[in-house]
Image 1: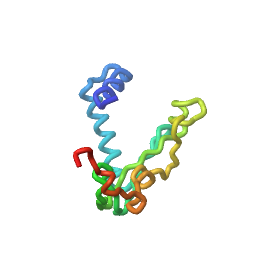
Image 2: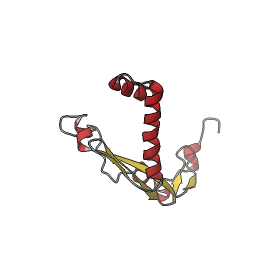
Image 3: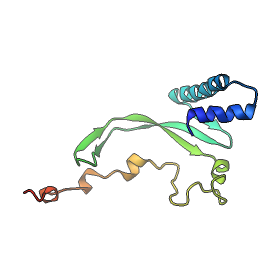
Image 4: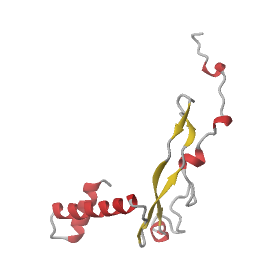
Length: 131
């Protein structure tokens, strides 16, 4: 669903309200959430979930295409944790995903990154038939 579809869905629920007016309200909600996160506050919507931010330290990573080490700068990331009510709408047992369950501290960059010392390529790995 894209923003215009969300606006149209809200407008259909409300009835006699213009799309322009609903769009303004939806934009206001997005801005309020963004402003709170920018200020370091978390945003909790009951029965939906919680958005929060966390600061990540600078670290060394690796470009998976070239295998060249590169520094990943410190940054602030937004994290969303869905409520149990929302998760229950996906599956009867309350899990949102049958394939992979992630704990609340799972972070794709940190948990799946390949450590520099754990991955080495020899020149033979780059050999081609042209050599």
